[in-house]
Amino acid sequence: MPVTGPTSNTRRKWRRRSTIFWQPHDRTIFDHEQGGSGEPFSGGNIMKAYIIDGYGKKGGGRIGDLPEPTLRDGDVLVEVHAASINPLDVKIKNGEFKLLLPYQLPLIMGNDLAGVVVRIGPLVTRFKPGDEVYARPDADRIGAFAEYIAIKEDSLAFKPKTLSMTEAASIPLVGLTAWQVLVEKANLRQGQKVLIHAGSGGVGTFAIQLAKHLGATVATTTSTANVDWVKHLGADIVVDYTRDDFEKMLSDYDLVLSSLDTRTLAKSVQVLKPGGQLISISGPPDPDFAKALGLGWVFKQLMGLLSYGIRRKARRHRVSYAFHFMSASGGQLERIATLIDAGVIKPVIDRVFPFASIQEAMAYAETGRAKGKVVVKMKS
Image (cartoon, rainbow, N blue to C red; front, top):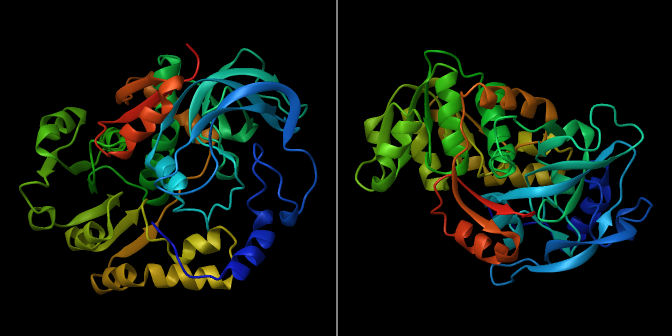
């Protein structure tokens, strides 16, 4: 979702204002222009981490040494055993979110993980050293591709008992995305119909299982090779996009969850019944998203322009459009863990790479061909 528009002066002013919402990244060089105080590094033990020094498709990351992160009063320090790669990681690395997420470089990558608590801040009450946990860190504090990460207590949850560390690491980001769209935002109910695009992807494989548990009729799109496989996950109707047009085969749906391009997004409006909801996790962002982030007038106008076409098309079809950017939530991860331990939802993992091969893992994930998740084992 490339974003262009504001001048460099506007971006600098927004970055200064935005520290109310986006605090400086714990594991990067502190930017005094953003304000605040304190040292982002602990100055203690050294850890290995996967770092990017700049944005761009041609720029590669590297494994390097950094001090362990500092621990705030409400933080939990976790030794990372496994982390997974998401399309969001690729977009951050390529610079597609650098206006919305103004990280300082160098930046430790990684958006979800599983591991063991090693230390807690003085205000932490729910966790203790030795607890097995999993999490999606807050968007301003990513850094799962490292030996250690400091996470807010509220963003952390106990790992599902029935899963290994590798399996648990595949869940947080896709699980929270599916939960927040289907349960929190759309209030999907028994008897309703939902189209979940890209059913063989990380979000798709989780969302299909969750939607079936909620009692919905589930349609999905995928390639020929994955048709039987997504049916096994629970999809009632599978559209092979290499052969058929989903907008000609489906109608009267209550909800569409889209993670694809704007062309597919526009076609998705046609399958919804009046009053239906079109929710995208890949953009374009809408003014409500800017409002939720507390962004200023310039960004509200920019996001309004970016999403004007799809919002107008949705209104003409008497349906609604919304963009959703997943947020961290330990409470929701606990509810997801309950479903997993009950056997309702199973993790779907395509490949597992050792940390030493994380460059190869990122390249594989960037192809978009993974069935489910790509996981990196941080601890052997």
